[in-house]
Amino acid sequence: MFFRAGKKSAQDVSINEPIDTDKDGNALTLMDTMAVDDTVIDDIDVRMKSEKLYDYLPALEPRERSVICMRYGLGGRKPLAQREVAQRLGISRSYISRIEKKALEKLRARFQEPPE
Image 1 (tube, rainbow, N blue to C red):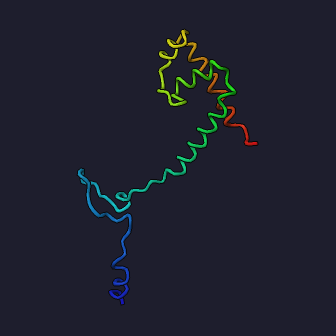
Image 2 (image 1 turned 90 degrees about the vertical axis):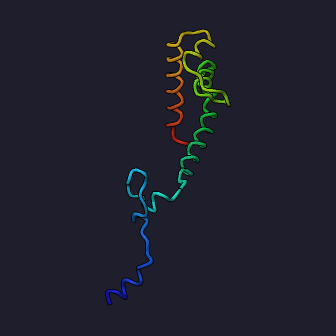
Image 3 (image 1 turned 180 degrees about the vertical axis):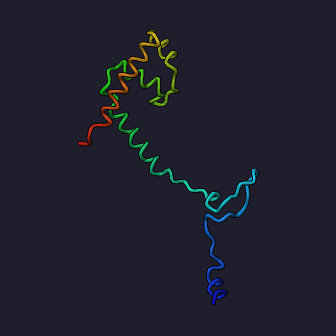
């Protein structure tokens, strides 16, 4: 009876069962070799937040908006360092830092508001 019961499950494979070893000698399981792209939900979340960000940008002062756009590469631009933004606007890097911090706080507050 024991051998008959074993025949039924002889073809079963666990995804956690070792099937090979990697170059360092660590066991590879079937689970390790399966490629699963389960970032779809994260991608959708990022896309939704990006759209909201563009909706919230007009709430910033023009200088805050330009600093945020230059610093984070919004609108298809290349992200710039605070030093580079300061040179372009003709103000100090520390002032850019203060503007950026204030603008990010405003945006964070908008994101935390309950949806209407």
